[in-house]
Amino acid sequence: LIHTTARAETIGFADIVVEYFESDNGTLSCPEGQGGEFPPAATVPTCVSLSVVLGDDPGPTFDYLSLPQDSFITVGFTDDVIVDGPGEDIFIAEVGDAQENAEIYVSSLFSTDPNDFTFLGIADGNTVTSFDLASIGFTDQVRAVKILSLENGGAPSAPGFDLAYVEAINYSVVPIPAAIWLFGSGMLGLIGIARRKKV
Image 1 (tube, rainbow, N blue to C red):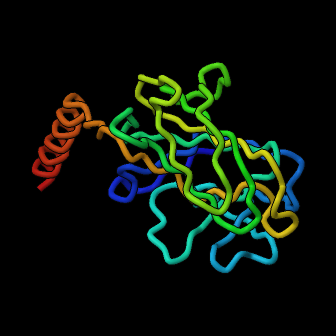
Image 2 (image 1 turned 180 degrees about the vertical axis):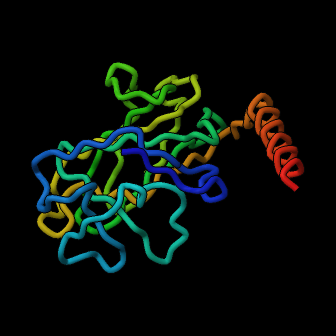
């Protein structure tokens, strides 16, 4: 399942779901995932779209995806890349009061191969955890971030790590290649010529 959000909403935020795996530790059978809105915390799990973790959640409420224990989601950055800059580079937001944790991995590729990922650290529950790529000596650009839930602290209401968003603090915008602009402009020109001939 590939989910994206509009470019204007995603600069500095994950904008594509690369991979999603839900373990058998969840409480619902959903076509995509389970989660809700915080606050208030859902008392009954709800089926949600995976896209709730993409883009910005400006508040005061946050849509989230619950990742039951041993479940994971890999999100990517298509219109920017995360780079190691001064201070912290990545923010991972988890909502709720159950204090679930998750392992965080980074990759310079849009990959589903675990070997392409490097362990970055542990994200804490009920907070925004920040990470510095320099702490692990990661010097490549980051295109994908993988979040692996470690526990079901909120079961049965919102089992597992409740991911709201993944934000890049230090990032570089990826320009649309000139060749694509030229091709697009050429196509528009051809469409315009075709319309004039019909008249």
